[in-house]
Length: 342
Image (cartoon, rainbow, N blue to C red; front, side):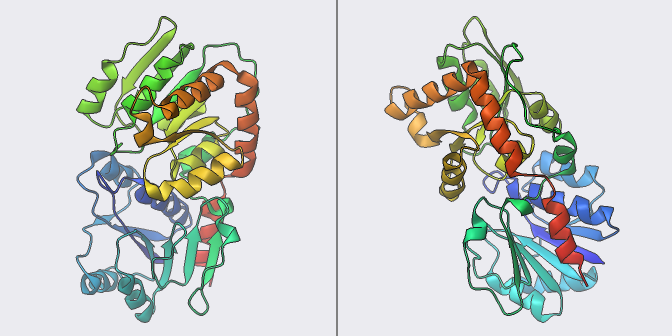
């Protein structure tokens, strides 16, 4: 079986589409499936490294429907995975009409894509019932969360427990590009808690790094600024708290049973953010634009939430238990079973 993956990454697109497709590609290649990426990676070295390190062939993104069909013919693709908010719906229909199986990874709205198999890995997406093309199947909910093998291997055998007694270790990250410049804002709120912590903060570029280095932590606070790294899952596995944007990485945090404080950055994150907080799977610190003004009520409330998480180990343990139980890490297996079924 030969499968193509049509997804992109970039400074504004982010890397979430790519990361979840890489996760599925890992499972497929482990089963002997050949996987080819048809992608515009926006010149992001980290994104390119994700494919190179796994030996996944990478081809330029086709410019239009005719180009996509030509690439599918040239590579002898049996099936195509589509993961994009911007691809014209006609491309999926043309692929289906060519006799190929189509899997569309979606976030709620199907965006007009015509697929044989839809995957919506979001919390409570199984409660929706959108109209599907005849014969199509929809796999929805956290049971189908597409997680990379490195995360799955690091999943602890049980939730974390309270009482380590150490200064809380915090990891702050906001996607592969941090396009909306969240890192300095959230790191600044951590400093304002006055609580002790040791934080690793990911800076996506030199400008963000400079802003982070300009912060002045308190006497029992430490901030280490690092570049985007493939070692992030290992850092998370050894952390006591994550501070992150609500998005595809949320499901990785849940799988690791890591207590998390989430911020929603863009509009398409608000639904997942709200559901995750309402279920008690993570703590919410609010909407990024409202946190930029230090004296705003929203910023002050966020400081209080972060202080509570840093100083209340039993609360972190309770979050860990609920998070760990929500995502078992086997979503890629379930999706690959459906895609490769006769």
